[in-house]
Length: 322
Length: 257
Figure 1: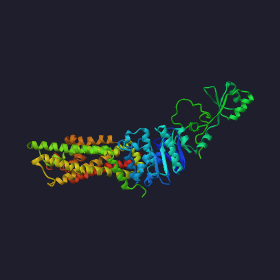
Figure 2: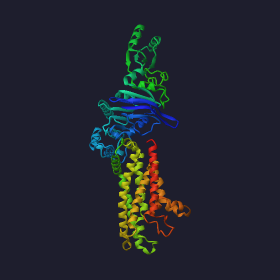
Figure 3: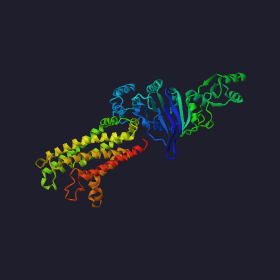
Figure 4: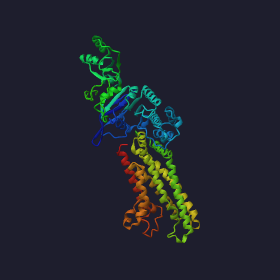
């Protein structure tokens, strides 16, 4: 269990983390999501006692990180990949960590095997690819068989096989009853891995909810309709008060309504229709919508034509505070 | 106490010291510089003994430490600074979140390493230089020799600790070396020739080191060494080292990693 209470971090006039309150529960993979610059890494560094909060605190199993006895036995962390001396071999890097926390030496070999680094154990970390560095970081995180695992962007730089490996690993860790928190800015990845979401933007909590509930709450059901007569369909839908969200390149329309409603309307008005497809809202869409106001660095292009996406600004950020 | 075991932290830091190649390289460099230069000076003096002003077999052996110390400065700066340049300080602090404990372990492991290395370097350099001096040599047991050799070991060890403190203070090995190498090499040897600066410069660590090694020149002649004696020299060196280590600790404790 990780408890974040009123956590705030200011750098001069900039507030990176602003009064965050949430809990990360055991037995689940919790995704820690937010746009770049939202304060994810800063929050994680404060969890691990690296940065001192301006206000508030983080407790891990009831204890602040800096007061843990042999912390690697309680919390395993993966921070930025490049937190290893480039001149030390992977094996020696893990040995040093194990020694400082009184972790038995055989565990070093276990995590090397677990991370698939057997062939690279005697190579210096500076020669590692990004993906291998990430595997070494995961091996270090699991060294003390911790009850709490905190991973900052764990799939960064991994090849597809590595991504799959991480996904399974995190699911297994949660299934063993451990508390797993992973940050990500890749929504598609998070959607496949996490059960629960903590979403922040500009240092504030935007959502703390289950994955399905989050998507349902922040997107609307949508339908894609393909017709040879788009003009008429548009009129019919408009007449029924249904919002047409987008025109697609192939001449089809996307409307924020149900397939049943479209079916009834086109039958009543005798509009020929070639295809009606229910569009599934994704985590990415829900996320984009929620964080539209909280994105620190937004590209200049207008919003992409995402189905079920209302115009930015119609949703108050923080509307899902619990 | 809820923290890491101090003994475990020291063991881990000791392992860290000896699992990077730079440790062996810098100690080897210190050894080669000290014994090499020491032996060369001794040979040179032996071949031209009547032109040597103030001949002293100790100076022949230990003057090369002023070069050898530079490698120990590099060792100290790298042991700490590489944690910052590689970002591994964050890994180290998640493993040992009590900063004083991590710092203490690191400084102690580095200092013990420097002590072991210095002992070998000083004794071997002395013996090699005395062998090269031939008929003009002195022995390990001669008057003043044991205390001079002990002073040399203490000086080299403290200089390495001093360097670790400065490197922690500036959070970079490159910056630490940029400050210390000129300070120790040029500072008093170069600027020391300017009479007006001498009253200040004589308290610099390298001047105290010369005094501690009994090679500052004849104590009767004020033109050479600082002339305050070994006891004061040791106190001055300890003060410098303590100041550097405390400054480093305050930065490590106060700043986000």
